[in-house]
Image 1: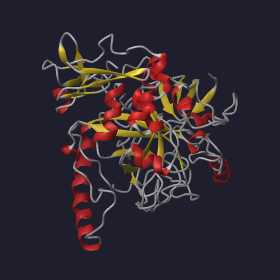
Image 2 (image 1 turned 30 degrees about the vertical axis):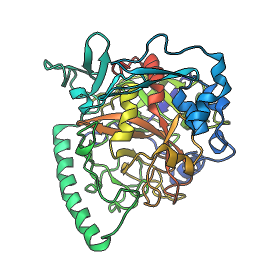
Image 3 (image 1 turned 180 degrees about the horizontal axis):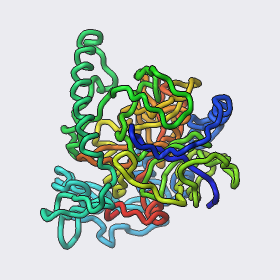
Image 4 (image 1 turned 120 degrees about the vertical axis):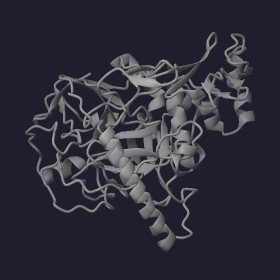
Length: 471
């Protein structure tokens, strides 16, 4: 890791700023830095190459499901000559809850009974096992519930109650109430506008804001699609009295104070990030490609004590493992305008992507491809894209996923890199991805590409010590 670098951390608060007397770069200097941002892919990287079993499965251990992504054919996957090197994978009886084990190529498949799913039939499929946050299955005790760091199980052994003043992922009551009010008003406005102007509009089954209470995993509330303008700009020196909410982060709107309290920004690399604790920030590895010791001379709230870039990341080769952790020299003072986002267990985090209809991405990046950066924190809701559809748009690895729309102009853009892809589950926000790269911004037929955080939970926990449930 490197030492001595700095990172600018900002909270959204109309009365309290974490930003203290920052010295900013000029607009011209900022533009020159932004020009090198690699939110979109260039060059003959791995993502542009045809899928290859050696690249997919020898770089790190992969499962039968991941090998199938290469062949896209069950029979061909199982019959591959790799299987001759391995014995019966079912001898250890890995399948829980009376699941039936089938031997495969260096792996096994569990055929799960009704009510269970997951690699070992360990996940609770029906109403998340009645758990407020995480549902686990124990061979001895059956279904058990668990909670994120900063929470504990309540007396009912299903609910999670905070044990700290500012628990992760939980917005302040006043902020949550304000967001509910805006959501109700804006949903009515959107429905009226669509019924008048676009009575037959469709977009890959996303025709209107989806009520996430219908999701089988979650009763998570849907997020607002628009927000009241916020005339307070803590991140850039150029303050404008009027803003247009339709031209931000590409198709997004301004975030309300306290709506995304885990969002941070670097005033050197012009990348985003997210608070994981009072001393840990997570961001994209490519944001640190050209960072050198002593390069940070700009005053900011928090100096960086350590950089931890994933050991398998190689920007000259691909955007695989585009993830990094930053440790602050001094802790952040939490409030409802500055608090961490939650981490969940591996399977829980993965399931959120496919079950919850929309997730939230945010940042101060450019408002369109090649356009100007935003003066205020922006947000946009994007749906998870099926992997088959995603791979028809871009060559991605199993460490990435797509989110966004094929034709609707909503996307993250240059300068948003490293920012959070966050998903709400029962009034608590969890980190599900990191803004990584894409082909331009909101380009027709293309999606935003995100680092798949679920693949790195063990790595994150080992470095930070933050508990992500019983992963």
